[in-house]
Image (spheres, rainbow, N blue to C red):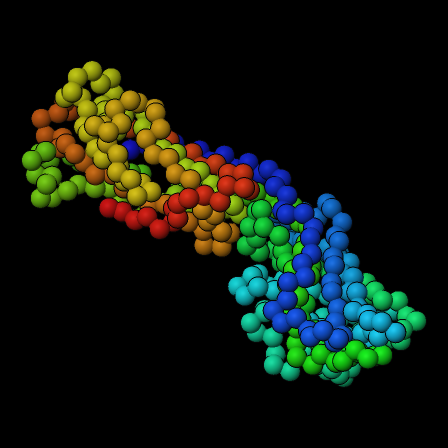
Length: 351
């Protein structure tokens, strides 16, 4: 059985969510205590190609920390913090440079795996960023340059931003008390990145071949089904959701060249994406018989969409021919970033 495989690999630019910042905290500092809030405003025009070889290099995002102040010169004097990212997110590389030029590396942690001793009020502890605002006459803000690198092949989702939080402790002055229990601010850094909605797909396997069927009777198929190999599949890697359709040129009939009568054709059933279709259910040639809206496949192992045919008729009594064939057309198309797909297409099996 011949298969025509169409992949609409449209590399459309799908911008991620606009730059934003949040002040939601897991544990807000008590009133009358020191504290900071973070805001990040990135330049536009940062792009990431999921299938590129160089990754996203040297994307610099200014992170501005604003210290908590009170009346009578009460202010946050010192802050010690680390950057956090959601558990399971990619292994980003981050470098932070504070005003005055001190540069910190290895200060980004998964939010559920921050070392127990970090952050801490100490200028001699590695693995954290330390900044001294100074007395009441010094500026209440400080801007850090956060240099982010996304390694090549990182499994980013089109339509979702990269976000980092901050976890901090601090010292107060002028009446503001210290905060020694680490405090979280979610989404302190939300990176405005445009991810190419990338899709890569191919057919893996052999021809869907039933072999020699001339001596097979239709009556025997109930006890001894004749199927194509169960190991054939369509492979999909995608940064976002995608759609899949399938059609049959002959309406799920294998036909000999120049077929004119019922004895020149053999009916079969096809299973793909959890659906079974045949000539009885889809008799019109070339029309869409299977259509799925699939959730993102990811960029690592992706989805394997298995496909298998099963004879509904034997070849015994049919007119002889070296070949009986049909042409299947599978089309895979990326969906827009606002469409997350409805089907876990990689979960379907055969038969």
